[in-house]
Length: 608
Image (cartoon, rainbow, N blue to C red; front, side, top):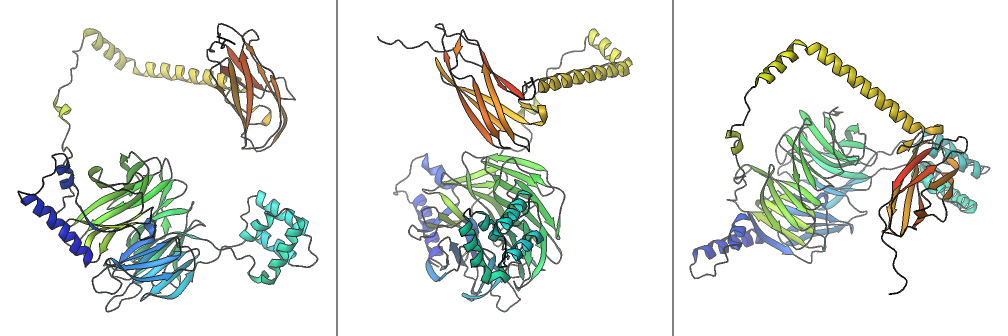
C-alpha cells in the first residue's frame, strides 16, 4: 500500500537523518519533541471534502483480503470507501446519516462484512458495496386520547375548534403528542387548520405513525470473541430505547428502556454468554445494561458527556467542563484528567497482533491530539485544524492507524510506530518522599493526660451535653429561618401560597446607578397584579419611580425590572436599598431583598 510505503519512507528518513553526520541537525529543543511523538504521517488530503464525526467513520476488511478499507459517511448524504489513498466506491444516501458500522451477519468462507448506515429511523444495509435492504425501527405508540381526537377530525362534521382545544389540553396535561398533532397546534389560523386537516384525510390510515430517530450505534459479538465472528447491531434511539438487532438485521433480539436519551454506547462481552452495554445519556448519567437488564448503579456526571471510551474495567467519560473522569465499571471513581480546552473526540487505541497495548486518545478543540496511558500523558500532537472525527484501528495492513477528519473537510492518516513506547515511564512510582520525614509530634504534658482521663471517665455525660446543645442550636436556627421566610426577607418566599424568588444586582459606578431586579415565580400558579416597592434613604439617593406593578407572574418565567437610582450626596455616601414584593391581601410582603449600594463616584463638573 501507498500508505504503508510512505510511513516506512518517513521512518527511514528519520533514522538516516540521525545516523548521517553531515545532515542538518535540529536544535536541542526540537530534538526531544520529535523523539517523543510515536506517530508517523502517512497521508494527508486537504481537499477530501468530508467533514465527519467519529461515528461517521469505520474501518473493515470488506474484501476479506487483509486490506482494510476506510468507510466514511457525511452530512451531505454520501458514503465513500477508500482503498489506500484512492476512492474505491462512493454512493448517495437517501437521508442524513448518524452512524456507520461494519458487522458480520453470518459465518462465511471467506468472511465478508456487512455495512450498516443508521439514518433517521432506518438502518441501511450494504453488502458487496451495494444497497441490499433496510430495517425500520418499530413505530411509537400513540396515546388513545389522541387517536380518538383524530378519528373525530376525520369526519366531515367535525368541530375543529373543539378538537384543537382537546389536543391543547392533552399537551398541557403531559401527554406526549405525535408530530402530526404538534404541527396542527402550531397553526393559529382557522382556515390553515382546516386545510391541514383536509390534507391529512387521504392518509388517515397512516396518520398517527410516529417514528423515532437513531442517535448512536455499536456492534456486539454474538457467541465468539473473534474479529470475524457473527455480530449484532446495538442501536440507541430518541425515545430512550436501546435495541439489539439479530445478526440478519431483520428482527429485534432485545430492547431495553432507559430514563434518558442515549448519546454514546460502548459494548463488552458476548450476547449468548454475558454482555454489558454502557450508555452515556443526555441527562448527564451513565447507565449499564447487563444481559438485557438496567443495573441499579448509575454514574452521575457534573455536566453532559461528549465522549465515552471503555478501557478494560474502566470507563472514561469526557464532559463539557473540559474534564475526563475515569470510573470503575461498578461506579467507583478512580481519577480525573483536567484539560485546557473543550474535548472534540475520544477514542481507544488497541493493539493486539504484534504486541498488546492500549491507550486513550483525546482530540481537543485547539487542534491538539493527546495520548494517555491511564492518567499519565504520553505525548501531544499539534494539528492546524479542529478535529471533528477520529477513528483508530487497522487501515490497510497497519494495525495502529489513526484516521482524522477535520472541520475544513481535510482527511489525515497517521500510523503508530511499531517500536513506540506507550508506557508511562515519566510517572513517579511508589510513595512520595515526604512520607519518610517524621512528624514533629509534641510530648504529652500533665494537663493533656488529665484531660484525656477526664474525657474517658465522663464520656457519656459529655456526649449527652453536646447532643442537647446541638439540638437546641438546630431548633433556634429552624425558628429563625421560619420567621425570616414568614416576614418575606429570605431569598425565596412561600407566603400566601406563592413561591417567588427575588434577586437584585447593582450596575454602575455612580452617581447614576441601575438596580436590575429579577423576579421568578417558582410555583405552579400564576400571580396577578403584584406591586413592587423600593425604599431607601432620601438624603442619599433619589428614585424617580419607586413603585412598579407586575401584571402577571407566569411560573418558571424570569422577569426583569430596572430601577434607576441617583446618588445626591456630594461626598458619595453609601446606604442600602430595600425592595419589597408586596401582597395585595396581607400587610406582610411576599418577599424582600436588601441591596447594599457601593460608594458612589463624585459627579463630573459641568465645565473645566
